[in-house]
Length: 403
Image 1 (cartoon, rainbow, N blue to C red):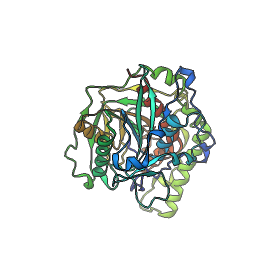
Image 2: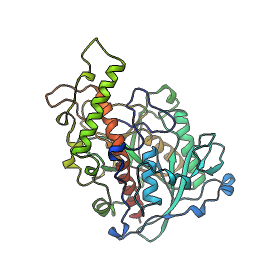
Image 3: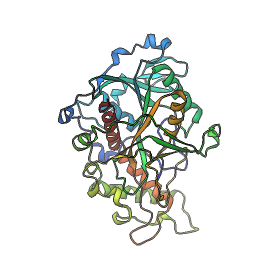
Image 4: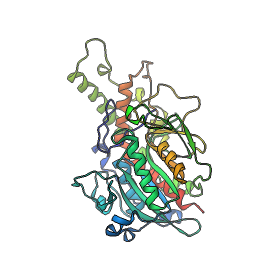
């Protein structure tokens, strides 16, 4: 099990290097257009006209009923695709859509999104309307965070971003969505999971200011609606065997083995027979969560009152806990704490981009942690864009099904 680093402003240390979008082996498969009519629903309504950068520079963010926040570039693209541009397919390398977003800076100024900005924004945002089960339009502030527990400005930056969102949007609820590590061997690649609980476990000295480390938080007053989950799962969510199958797995294993060889060439270790000398095969690496036979239909899992685990470090456990966390990630417990302090309700809807990976080869030999980390990173880089589509759709269903 692991927690995945975001891709804002930093390359993680002692963690797999992962791409923010899938490599060429999967890039020819776009995310599909969303057929809302298949489940008798309509697409979210862009409310860009409600955002005036001149007035917002002094008056704050647009009013919203709810905040939906995500983190990495792959997650951001999936969020934009479902919520703002669902009528056409979305390629993994398409970034033109970013020009429609706005950037919010620490000095409370707001500008149109720009790749050439001379200062780092706190977050990017857009606004949509989603019609709920009562026929009411819910104003949803879409947020792409530029701050994160695992890099500067650390927890203080994340808390500041959340406090700004809460103070200036008027929202009463917040949902976090994005990629996560699987908490159980039964959590398949691409599964989408919802919970209302979060536990925090921080180790970095930069986050020592956290006065609530090791605590668990639970939203007791609200849990997202499940009414639209079955139809969304059946008709709209992405089956991961489209991009994770025998052909793409063979390519991924070749990438893993080649990486091991490259590492050995760069820094040969003559003190032992390291993992770089081992060639891994399908039977060594493909466990239940990564078997294409289990990926023909995306999963939805309701994990009410089962905590997620928030960390500020990357890790993979060797064995599954007897009472596993529903998933592993790197920000959500901070959201829970800040939301409770501000009087907001909260939930977390994440996708399993990083399933539990095998600990031993088919012959029973242990797989080194470094190899397991590299393998997990390869899976994420190829599939995180697609699995994020599923958790965004589940987030939409949670909002649209509410009453």
